[in-house]
Image (spheres, helix red, strand yellow):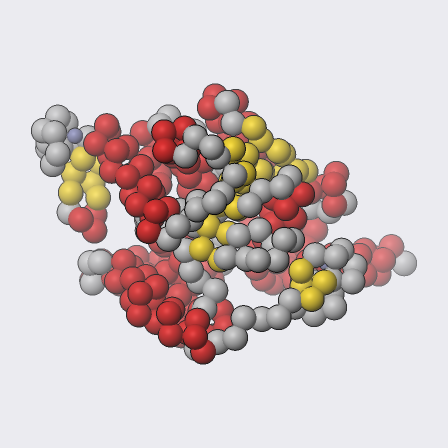
Length: 314
Ligand SMILES: [Zn+2]
Ligand SMILES: [Zn+2]
């Protein structure tokens, strides 16, 4: 039997980058302390009243929701937590995602909103496959989720939108953006995206310093059901291939992911923020939400979809 580094009862989880084995109870404390420290370090909840947690039903966002629920009741009793889930209409997958969200929210007593893409917006994510956006369907799906999550959080009066982005997600983005030299994208990879535009809710990433594996452990330790399958549309995506590659680098250079993240946030980001101008936002003439040009990327996507279905019906 391997014993826990902190209390000598039987260890259950290996924290790889710290080469540390922990038992279930010590792991839960370690994990929640890490989120708390991240929240405090970046002032994520300073002045917050209503926090929306974007939940997909996957291990990261469900771990985030469960941990935030504990932290809010223990340390930030003035904050109201609301979960939002978008049902993306991916057959054989989205049903199960929604079921997990509903079960966990009901168990924990968390108010939740389910937004059904098909009945509310008139299309499903797989419909994008037949458009030119289909080749990069994960990117298009990301646009949909980012836009709707912000709009829904704004409509229910939230002053923060918390997402389950973890260290692996962020390092994958950094890897891509550094490789391409996309400084405008790099400057947006940060723990908090503050906003003073009332229609753009401030986004926080409380899991940014935790790995995918740590989130999975926490979900398991808290008895949160795990999705048996990953999204069928993401199979073979560039994102997954890059993550696998980063896993190989991490094996050769232990601590690589933490190092790249820390160098970015501590050394490079402060300099980029000084030199890369914030994009100036205008209002989308179709939906009225903040946009870089006269039509926002979401409305553009929806109009391409509408054009394609008009073509098909003639
Ligand atoms: Zn222990
Ligand atoms: Zn728009």
